[in-house]
Image (tube, rainbow, N blue to C red; front, side, top):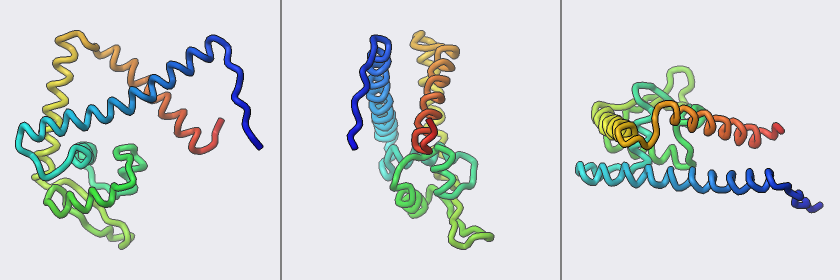
Length: 165
C-alpha cells in the first residue's frame, strides 16, 4: 500500500518550509557547536579527547550515571556512547564502577581531570552567554522562547517515536 502525499494549503506549505529549515538549522548548529569546542580545545592544547567526548563530560557533571541513563536523560544521543565512555575511562577523565545491585551495569563519574575539562566548557559557554547579551544577539527572554519551541519539537519527535499522534 502506498501513501499519498497530502495536498497542502498555503499555511501548511509555509509550516513545512519552516520545519525543514529548522531541521537543517538544528543539524548545522550541533555540528558548529562541536567545531567551536574543537577550536577551543586546540587553542588550549587539549588534544586527547574530541568535542563529542568533551560534551559528554560536561553533561555528566557531578552526577554518577550509567550509559543507559545518559541516553534516557537526553544528555547523549549516539550509538557509540559505550565506546566514548570506555575511552574516557582509559584516558583518566572518568571513574567507572560496577553497580552493587546489577553487576552488568557500570556507573561512571568524572575524575578531577574530567572536572577540569567540564570547567573549560563551562567557562566557554559563560563567555558565549556574555557576548550574546553584550552584542544584543539574543536576550534571556529570546533564549527562553527558543528553548520553549525546541522542547515542544523534542516532545513531538518523542511522541512520533512512540507512535502517539
